[in-house]
Image (cartoon, rainbow, N blue to C red; front, side, top):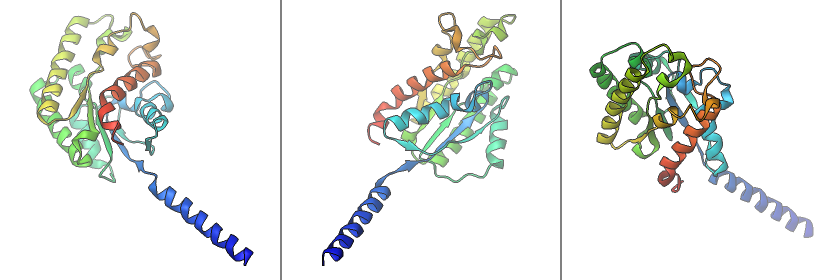
Length: 225
């Protein structure tokens, strides 16, 4: 009789553990972009999507390893091709989009960028299905980097601002969270360690600052998780 009771307790305990595991929710994350999203010149652990998920895990929000569709040098049309060629298991719980620096760098028309960015944002929305868990990052100012010291840095900054204004207006119209990390990319005089070894891309420390800004902007949504 005693053995039977102990066996019953064991079964109840196993069922409890099984139910607890089922209650745990693990989310998925799709990050779309270019060199900034893939983390050119930094280790995998220093990429901002990876740092973001680590911080969210510390908050009790578990997200599996991110699906990243990004490549150094990609413009909006090249990201679209990359998405078309990818095998995606959507819907994703979280989706990010960060693109446009190479459109500006190559001197692409801003009107062309506007059209292609909106197409990408619509795609990102279709992958998420939830505007509250889709967010867009602004284009950082690469003109502040040592790589651009012999270029017209003021012109680069103006053009980056123009491209970001387009991004902001489209996000605002579609009620998508726009996170402006551009001011952070302009603080290199006081944060020289925010520059990666190639003199062009952000370091892991700068990406960490981006992550803090992302979490601040997403705080109302994260509170509901």
